[in-house]
Length: 417
Picture 1 (cartoon, rainbow, N blue to C red):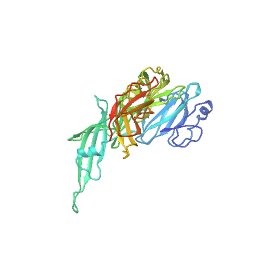
Picture 2: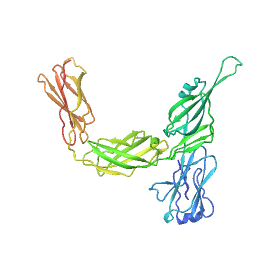
Picture 3: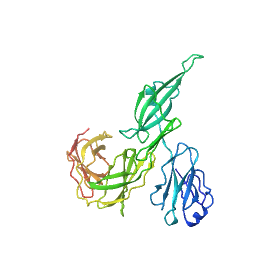
Picture 4: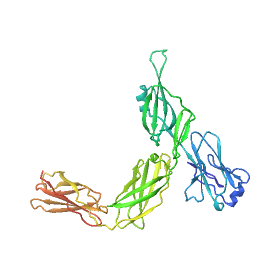
């Protein structure tokens, strides 16, 4: 979510910016501008500005600037933890040529908790739910993941009028990943002391902190990935990249896109999960230029797309392989024996260096009942024929791509009913 400053009136919560031109700079000489609730307020301060904004706990707030809204945004300060007061950031100099944009980035942190099923496995009791108090204590020195302590309790009726309820308690040491998932948890025989106001930031800018009786994690928005490469192998691009301004372990997924240039070919996308830095884009058309971009995603959101890398695919020169796994069966048997349905199926062929655009299926009757051929799309892996079930039938399949037809499959024989 982003707050805003502008001379115009905008609905609360819109992502808009403060434009520093001569007129607006002059208008800032007195007091802060009137702005929507939750946005930035600006006041003149020498050659710079004082940018202030209200905060709430447990959100994190970052003021960002950019000389051009189409260019990357730069953080003016480390993220500030909200506590219900108004915070401010001072800029010492105006933007180049008297023009610039500012915005307020508001990040809602992830709560670090122990799932109730895991809490029950440790506590051994569940009476209307398990109450938790979670506290982070630092980053694990070996893995770098957040670690902390969770205290659990549940209160159960002991039955009988006038009887006092029983409260059961337990505690556990917990490790979370950078998506807030529990990696490991282990019971503790005693509850170690914790700092309810603890906070820490690792070298990547990941921040953990305690607020009240809850633990939180904030992961910075990643910058656009760098060092993107794409090498063609068959009808695929083997793509690699480097995450940028983000903890690689915090990346939950990356989306790879191939945009055809001056072509009617389809846009190709694929998503790899986790912190992988390599992936495959399939179904490339021959003699086509694609612009390859990568977007990385964390629990805080997605990066901008990487700078596009243009790669032109080869002229098609490799036919597809022979389809495998060819089989056939009868359906809808006709008592007269003349209108039975033979259904053939097969496994996809290896496409060569361009996508398979069609399959040709041929069936041959053993008693001279004829040869029948059917062509289906390159994504279809079955075909049906209406023929007499009495003779034995031989079934073969052949795949086609931009280069031409590949070899025939092995024949599959299907006897009569």
